[in-house]
Image 1 (cartoon, one colour):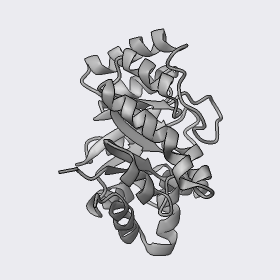
Image 2 (tube, one colour):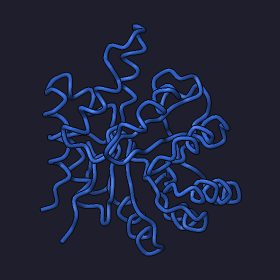
Image 3 (tube, helix red, strand yellow):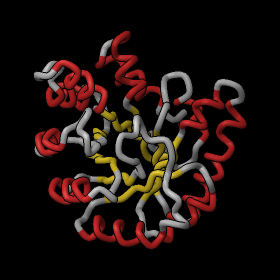
Image 4 (cartoon, helix red, strand yellow):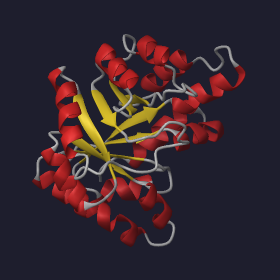
Length: 243
């Protein structure tokens, strides 16, 4: 029996709204706990050095309160990020090669050129019992090289799928299916994220083999403005139900 793909909700946008006016409205902590209560399988945060959305203290405040899986994303070339992860020991750390000031994640790691570095940092996190996922573009050679880095999982960067899905869903998903098959063959767990939404998520989840988890933030929080937060979490969960 196939297990449904797990939904990890990225709460960065809630923090962005809070920070836009100062104070604590909306209450990030309470909103995140509500998202868990509404059925999310996990919570994702992506703290950046400028703390323009999730602050490092938010991570510390959330860690002891969460009852689902906690995933922290970020660039391990920032020593402050590494220290934060090691201090809070999430269930999973997702390594993303962001640069300072970047609006949003827009590319994955080159696991061939960066293999030596990635082997070292992956081992550091795994030594502390933290599951590691590497953010990747949907390229088979990069998936194969990721396995050599010692990571537990990869997260496929799905912006290209989301853009191309509007014109040709079958073509849009081809590279992702190939990467999923290779990931399975080399023993890597598979996550995915970026620009997945209520329009394209079901097709992706039904056609990608062995998809363990999707991380969704911007679209889900945006949809919550129309449908309400509880209903929206459930709408996304329904997209992930296997037939």
